[in-house]
Image (cartoon, rainbow, N blue to C red; front, side):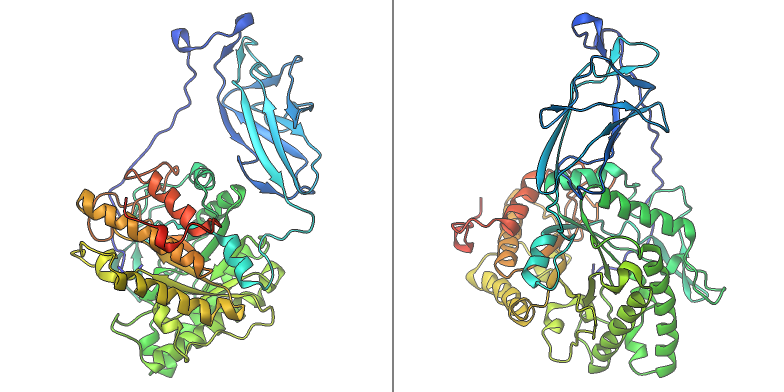
Length: 510
């Protein structure tokens, strides 16, 4: 996002405890059974799409030692399946399954099927899980079809600024680390697996995880080694998103504090120094994720800029050079990285600069590159402090459609995938102003749909009103923030609906 992120919010410590309910709060079933066992997790997520050949077991984990009742009537698409105790932990059960490609499934575990080992009158409540086995040979992301790629990415969401915590004080050429490995982050929370499960349930298809790496690199070892604990936390979030059936986009985000394209454009020695760090950074990231499937997209940079007044030809050339350099570094690590999709931004991730003739897409033998741009147009209404209060004239709407259609003409129509890595609008102050904001966001998403673009909503977990207030989902567990459920569902519909009667002209301010 265009606003630099500094500072770590106050420490928020949360303690979680699983408490069994008893007494009058426990529902007593016929036969004396009491529903007191809590399902903690399932190896499959509701609504997920899985590979039939790789899923042979569904594991359900509970909050206590459990066993399978001899009278269990667990079914998969109406057919009885046999469950058994998990071979590793007595707090889980395994349900062997044999799946067929291209088939939708519903697993039903009735109340009374799972019992507490120490008290057979305690039982887990009903549990139902629906999921789909992909068609045979179906890939996580389609090959070389711009519209298919953007359709697959669909409506996306940003874990905005969570992994961007640093305090702005430059020490020996690097910003001081403010993360202490136990404290919350810039957004004040620690994401959980539930975040990604609830994003998927809401209809999100792609999560963009912006990450600042430079603060966690060793500036003294000559290799810019990334802190291993930091890498582990980033990877945990990627894998949680994967388990939820989401596509993931992983980038270098506010590393633009050291990725000084402006100085590099006029100083060859600085350029070489920065390229060495870019190589070290991207090689480590790519090595860490090289065996992950095609659900993962690596995005080379974020919003490299010197100022927001434009860009020199030299800066554009450096952006082109660095994009090529980063793509080469990723491809050189092999495995899945040899052919995975890589996103490459224009300078500043500006749509206007992407449309310039001097923006060059890197050479790539795999031919799997996606152009990444960000769009907060018009800036006065979406981000500027103070925010403009009005939008919606015919000129306003035409400006949006013209810009997005130009991206379509230059990229999508030429079979070059292009996506909006960030879009959004700050929450305004009054009910009337937010009606206009909601109108703008629906119109923007529908215009992006007609332009064939995927789009990722910016969410910095900052509730309230005014510039830079973008809060839709809790970064902790994916619950709704700022009463955003209806608006998000409207945006998802606008971006993805194929209803021919749902035109730009049909959108009115509610």
